[in-house]
Structures are given as structure tokens and as C-alpha cells.
Length: 187
Image (tube, rainbow, N blue to C red):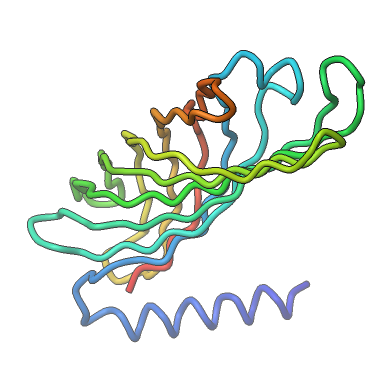
């Protein structure tokens, strides 16, 4: 355990030394959170909410504005309403957008908005469904970073996605709230 902590500290120190003279250009983020789909039928088959995991990359543009790209995965297992047979659902949201960061020292709040392209997949005894939908989102959060030369930040955020899919003559509300955080490697 001590050896792992020492190695981690050495890697972080080297990254800090290497990036001390470089202005922020972007980040690579590991995102973890909890997502709740708005559609009421979803709650009758699957649990109300569940974990969502993903990766994001940002690029600094100008005046504290960033461009970002996120890819996440949300999966749920449930039981069909009538037959009570197992069913699996996967949602893969791709998000692109712009956000504004307000650097205030250790704390860096941000807000952003963008577009979404979600691929969803459901497999059960009735059949397999693969489809997509487009929508938009709004997010807000805060990053905590020990110093400008330190290349790692911890982030907390909330995100609301508005996205509806039409499948089989029925409108499915795939949007909802996401709350979570992540770890950013700033370069």
C-alpha cells in the first residue's frame, strides 16, 4: 500500500513539474454519476435510476470558454411488465458543447450547454431494439484544483438532458437529471 501511494505521489509530482510552465489547454476527464430517466414507463420495468460512467475531453478556446466531448454508458436490468422476463437496457449518450469556466483560485465553477446524440439498446424475449435520438443538455458544476500548476482536479456537477425518441409509434423520454463527479487530468 505504501509503495502504491509513493508511486502515485511521484507521478503527480512529475506531472505537476512538467505542466507548471504551460497554460491550460484542455483536460481528460473520468466521469461517474447517477442518472434518472424521465420516462414513467421506464420506472415500471427498470429501477428508477442508476450509475452512469464515461469519459470527456475538453479543449480550451478563449476567455475561459471550453469545447467538450463526452461519451458515457448507462445500463439497467429489469423485468418486463406482464411476463416478468428479464430485459436489459443500455443508453450511450454522446454529448458535445461549450462551457464557461470562472477561475476563482482553488474553486472553478462552470456552466455549459450542448447537443446530444443518444444510442439506446434494449434486449429481451420479445426482441432487440437499437435506435437513436437527438436532444440538448445544460450542465453546471465546480472543479477543485490545489493550484494552477497542479495537473489534477476533482469535479462535481449536475446535468439535465432533454431528449425524446420515437420508437414503435410511442414517444420515449430518454432525458433526465444526472448528478456526479469526476477526476480531471489537465494538460
